[in-house]
Image (cartoon, rainbow, N blue to C red; front, side, top):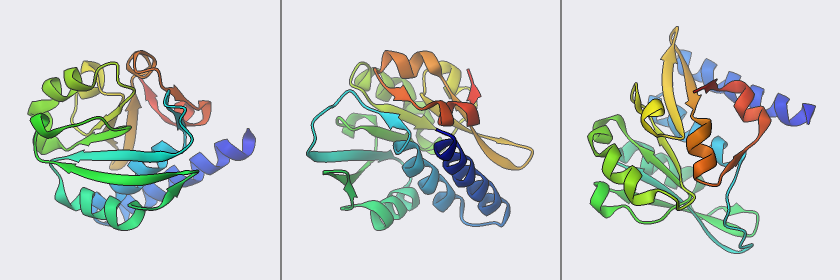
Length: 170
């Protein structure tokens, strides 16, 4: 357990220092979205198939996730990265990142995915309280994240204590 906490802490410290070194923000977000998948359990217990990460509205994050992780193994599953242009395009996925530019579509996307075991990740102030599972937030020029525990539970997801301990809990 201590080893897991140290790994999460190291990943987030590296990400925080990367953020401060002016690494492109889409790369930082991509790394964090991917790292979140390591510390969340989904109700889908199938041992094979696809593990789908969707992106609404940010081509840079989509391209980075797809280039770095698309087609790679997640246990006996394969990471598939999908790009959605709008809420109406969204299909079932394990993780869905909604870019700030598409935050106006949050309610439509969220209602479409409710109860389907999807971790919704956003990056606009207030969306954590509104129903996003994880919401990025900049505090003192460092990228942090909020974790909405009620939303996570209602999606039948389980978050490791290590990830929860690094989050701003709401």
